[in-house]
Image (tube, rainbow, N blue to C red):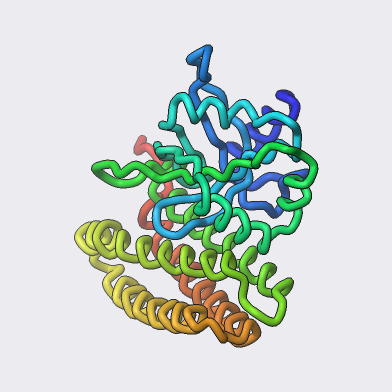
Length: 285
C-alpha cells in the first residue's frame, strides 16, 4: 500500500481502538512495527492477521501477489522482535517465518478461510511467507490502550463484540463442514474470555470489593455470570472439537454465547465503569 494510504489507516486505527473503514473495514487488522533491515529505523504497517490460538497470531506477506516480499517481511527477518498493536493492547512479539511443511499446512488452512490468498500465490513465482507473531511474556498487567480503567474495560469488551461478530459472519459463509481456521478462531475467543475473566477476578473485582463495598451484590452476580460464560465456552469447545460437528449446531452455540455475553458485558459496564471512572467532583468554594 502507498505510504500515505498506510498512514491514514494507522491514524484511524489508533484513534478508534482498532476500528477502521474503507479497504480494511470488517477485517482483522493489527499494526505491525518492525525495525528496518538496513536503516535501523522503526516502520509501522497495517497488516491483516488470523488468530493462531494462545498468544500467537499469523500474518501473510502477500503484498497482493507482487514479485517481491513486502519491506516489513525483510525487516523482521533481520530483526525478529516486533511491536504489535491490536487497537486494545500493545505488546512485543517474536516473529517466526514458518518453513517447509508447517508453512504449507498453515497456508492451506488460511486459504480455506479466505481463498483470495491462493489467488495472490498464483500471481507470483515466490512462495508467499506465513509469519507467526509470538507474544513475549512480560511482568505485570498488559499494556491496554486506554487512559482510564473504565475506558480500558470498555475497549476490551468492544473487542470481544467485534470478534464475535466476525465469527458469526464466518459461520454464515461456512460450508457443510467446519473449516480448521474457524475452529481456531472460536478456540482463541474462548481462551481470551477465560483470560479476561480470570484477570478481572484477580484484579478489578478485589479492588472494587475493598474500595466500593456497596458493589458486593453486583460483583457476586458478575462472578456467577463468569461461571455461566465458562460453561457456554466449554460447550462450544466440545462441539468444535468434534470432526463431524454440524456447523449449524456450532453457529447456534455461538449465537447463544453472543446473547449471554452481551447481557453480561452491558451489566458489567453499567455497574463498574462509573465506579472505575467516577465523575470529577466540583471544587468547593
